[in-house]
Amino acid sequence: MTDFALLGRYAVATAAALVALYLLNIVLLMVADYTLNSGVAAVTAAVPALYIGAYHAKTTGTALASGRMWKLAVLGILLNVAVGFGLFALAGVLTGVSILSMISAFNPAVFGAIMVGVIVIYVLIARFFMGLGQRQELKRQEKAAR
Image 1 (cartoon, rainbow, N blue to C red):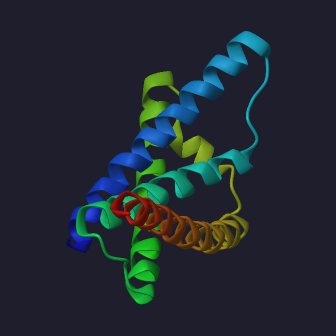
Image 2: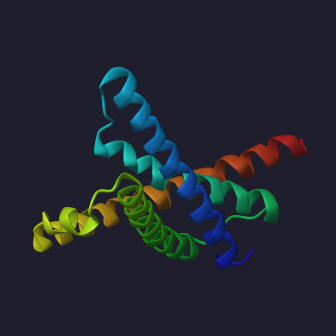
């Protein structure tokens, strides 16, 4: 299985997780006047990584090499950021909010530092859950073979 194929699945799972969190946040805001905190967004790193780890193990019956998992985690999180910014821009267009005015409200140095920190944490989360997904799938296959 190629990295490109796995990253394609990662991008689709990321978009689905982001849209689900956006919709859940909207529903909670409308119904209970409550919004999810930003930490919940870590789900958008964990779910796709868990999925592609398990998917690779299921289709090939083998584990990914550690170096390849790190590479996929980094590229997957960069995809996560790109999809997130794309959906952010789409939400701005749909709601009529000026994206430029929202971006200009950020201090670029602080925003950059925060983004680097978040990306590092998300890469660690993605790598952990990718390994977890493949381990669980390989254990399941081992039990089924008995």
